[in-house]
Image (cartoon, rainbow, N blue to C red; front, side, top):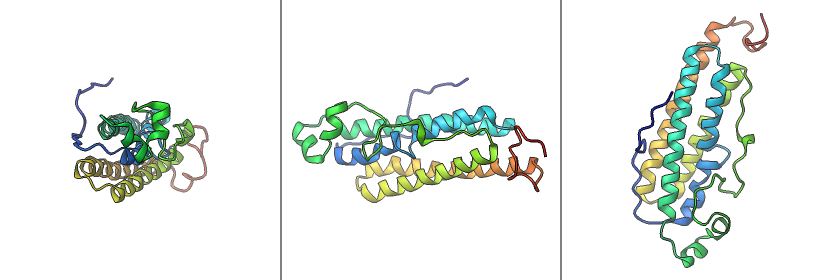
Amino acid sequence: MWMYEKKLQYPVNIKDPNPALAKVIISQLGGPDGELGASLRYLNQRYSAPCREVQAMLTDIGTEELAHMEMISAILYQLTRGLSMKEIKESGFDTYFVDHTTGIYPVAASGVPFTADYFQSKGDPITDLNEDMAAEQKARTTYDNILRLADDPDVRDPIKFLREREIVHYQRFGECLRLVTDKLDSKNFYAFNPSFDKP
């Protein structure tokens, strides 16, 4: 079903390790609005999408979110490679280090490990697409917050790219929501689940 191109969607070339910044960026891997939750959300929702166009969009965006996980993981790896124990302790990265050394593990910046509670799949296209649009806006906000904290241009550049993709995904999900509502009885599309209830 998928073809895997063995390169990042956007290049990541960070010269200077920064474990303190890695502690912040890691939320976009395993945090409540991160790329892991996004990919699982969309790839699960696609099965109950009401039409091929929406199924295809969920598959495309869900797959792209997997590519974003790769980018975030590359950023994390490059920010934490070659650290001394002194750098680990002084940056506050020691709490992560004790459990994961410098391995990539999906966790929020707060230290909470990834949980499936971070995403939803209801099987109701109106509910799911609104969830998806909100998720993309929350991810954009998280990238905005990371950009406020990061001053390294090598880090900021791929983060800006990821932020832009959240905006595009929000727009595509808006188009899907319009497509779904146009196919439903406009007097009832908030009153029933078209998968189960007949108007």
